[in-house]
Image (cartoon, rainbow, N blue to C red):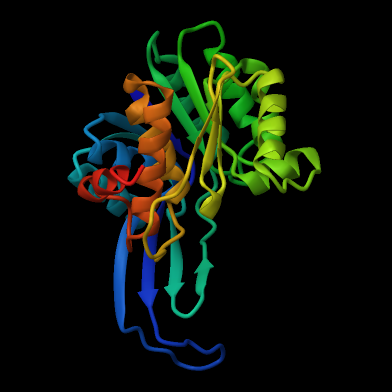
Length: 298
């Protein structure tokens, strides 16, 4: 089974406006609601690709109830921990000439609730996969990812980590199955400016030397590079389309990659690229028909 972890899920309130101005009343021309967070996004796109998963994490208040209900209506199994206080965050996404986001804070996660999550993770068994994506809320210990992978150490549980800087670097000693930085994040980890694909491959190999079993680097309009478990390098271009949305494209790539693994690394990279593109070219997350339409371009 695949488990995704979302510490700080959200209701994404997407507002479409012509040219909003600060300091005055603005009116939306359209609005949409989505239930997400990076791990949840992975679960949703996996479901589109016919792969089951269980969404773990924390929810609180009326917004938390809406998130759980909305995800379950999509046919995704959830096992969230309900917090006693606060409410799950609302993220406001303003789509106009430029894309603007205002993300909420979310509830405080107490130590007792975190231990409940650890207990659920302790129940994972050989052959399972866990996806850890995004930042750690300020109310949680900054080494939470490390604690999770340490608990799984010695078991045949594949860990996928999509995080920035130290969050990713500090878990490499536990040999995660896959890490997925983008090219900017990869450069920041090593204090380097990555100008060419060779630069990206060089530092991807550094991550592998530090413990990652495979490294997937997304490069926006320049495509993606995969350094697989065997040390082979695979690259893939991008799909053609009009970019509408930057939210969830990386999560969709992770989901597509996981879904395609049974058919080998090369196919996984292509399916991940198509899934990321399908989200980027949509108002919301990728749908199956769009993913496979774009896959034909690759």
